[in-house]
Image (tube, rainbow, N blue to C red):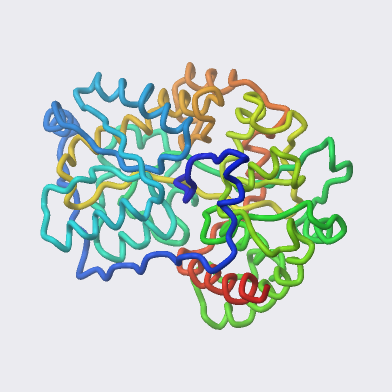
Length: 418
């Protein structure tokens, strides 16, 4: 999933990634003036013919080295076989890509520099509000036949209807992980985790929102203090925030003195938290990409005793997508790459932890038998349970409208209170 996360930092630089003051908020959404343009309905052979010779610029978060390698070494060569040159454009924040699209649209550019964006959540919602995404095109993709059309993670993106305005790429599950060599009796609920942190001062912390992972942790704790996802309206509701926000922020403000460094500072991002965890300064970490934990353990970046923390109430689940701007200069090529990325063969290649370790969006009951066998043969991990187990009882993501108010409240009532 696209994340707001820079390249991993060395331990020597760790001190420079601590948040000691307020963080920048999310960009304001644009205002759409009407229905977004839709792709012309045409035979796929015509799309392939128009795409031949085009160069597609895929703008995506550049801090995930495995993701970069997958696109450069696996997806791009496969695109070349279809006559399309795939060029990866790394960004530190997906909002950078969305802002480029919006600025070019405002300038009247009809041959935009962004052809494809790895996106989800509030960035997708921002583009939809500005009518910036091409819509009604995913039904043309041959690979959509392998997707369950009723899968709720793929029909709604953080509460925003997908409506054929982005093609699914992979699924994700929010998890917490702990060092089993140090934590003999791990907690099994979010409230249990907070109580464990208070009983073990200095051994837990979380990234400061608006870091993607830190913001997800806010939403996970919100569900816990509210009494479950069913107690929080999916679409942002000011009255619900006024009622539930104080419970969330009071709980986290009360927790702060028990955090690493007494809650005076927070890791700026997930990379900084991972540095703390790898350096045995804290006993737990967290991620919205659990499959990568196995690779990090195998490489020695994280302790071999790392295990995913089983939570009885489940955890947040979502999907990330590929979107095409309405003014993309190479729209046919972008559709071809999106279709290729969704193909069962690419979904299998991407799911291998040695390649990237991302969970598939294709329905395994719909893919060819040899691909299904390939998924079954993927190596099991002692670190991370199978996705079916991880996603059991998955909590739905809140609508994108919740993200910024929760982050703003955290800055004022938790960070500011310290």
